[in-house]
Image 1 (cartoon, rainbow over the protein chains, first blue to last red):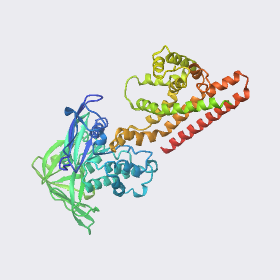
Image 2 (image 1 turned 30 degrees about the horizontal axis):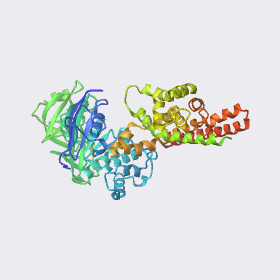
Image 3 (image 1 turned 180 degrees about the vertical axis):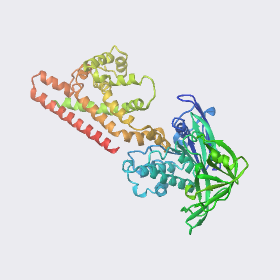
Image 4 (image 1 turned 90 degrees about the vertical axis):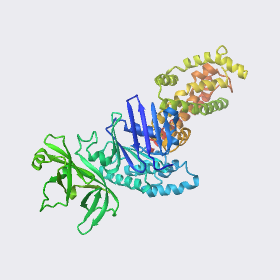
Length: 364
Length: 221
């Protein structure tokens, strides 16, 4: 299978509700299908797995055609190399963790299976619970078992349906880290369905926004958030950019870490990741202060030279959303209309962007 | 004690269970998972033997199995003997009368399997048949066992339909229930009492077994 090409999906259906989408999930990265409930995102995921029929479907993955209604091709679900993690995990209640994994290894020679089960269990850290049935596992353990079962298929695409919706906040954060770790280690192609923008901002590199059965935006998370162009988010979530950064250096004496997102270099409270490691950061527009002169005597770490690209009205009439450019990296700043006048902000004008180190949310 | 009648009843019960379970499983699966119009009508048909008086069921079966009917004529042409007043006729009647006892527990057990779990089976690489064997059958096992026990016990006890369709031919159609009635008619109370006790014990055992199975199924989830 050619790992260079990801998943291409084209779906159309008239009933029970209209759905007409075209989307792409690049190989080796996480693509988020984001939208409100009822937008059809779970239906799209089920169609990719072959669990849902469509009036028109064309699905190809890594050069293989999984569905093509025009050519009469419809590979049944059990012959598509997908790993599916269901929202409620859908573990088999009558089987132990080991048996669940064994069931998913039908495509491998019997002699390989025990070793493969061991390595999968190690991957999700469930070695001790291998002989338990789902009822005897906690929510987080069930999710890891479901993830291992999906990975057991050696999937070309890993499909996750609201994987963190059923767990509490603290566990959600650690499961997110787990997923990112696995995705990077195995360079998995992942399609993640979610209605929680935190999942998008922390995990995804590509974003497809679905509303009322249609794609209303798609592209890289960095680009879409940097332009405040994610439909369905601006109203209730403060604009924030999600940036892919790397650890550049550790300043252990000052307990700070320097990270770089493109041309934007920032100091953040020390994070436990080696130099060169990828870090996802979120920078809320309200946390970016603009100044015309370099300030002194502040507790501030990050003073960055930027250029105003555009100014747009914000949700609140007294506020303005300022689009900034730091080299090629885009950042947003939310300021008052009063500050816009005082600083005489206009497209093309150079400004200083001030960012408190503690207001940068880094996810490593 | 009419040992021949008891033997016949046991044979009828076992044959009925053996034939009815596979057929009912398919029917139950269709009713539990199928999406089609008229499901309510099919379910009503399956449940009909529960509320129709056995003599009414027996009367219609007698007419349907008779020499004048297509079913009766076809059977006689194939096997050279009439369907009514024969063990084979009794089996056929028993299959129809027991339909609700076999279908309903299995249908409930299958319907209780979440859609996602069945989808997960397919996404784990199981073909439709493998998914039935490795996921649906084991999960529906308590329902299947309940169906078997209820069908068996009910077959032993069926009276009205057997009398109408089979009559009371020793070794052919005289089941233990008919034999009890026979003994009472002949004022042979000790024999009737002994046989009634056998059926009573069987019924209590059947209920104990089904309740235990139901509890066990509940515990696992």
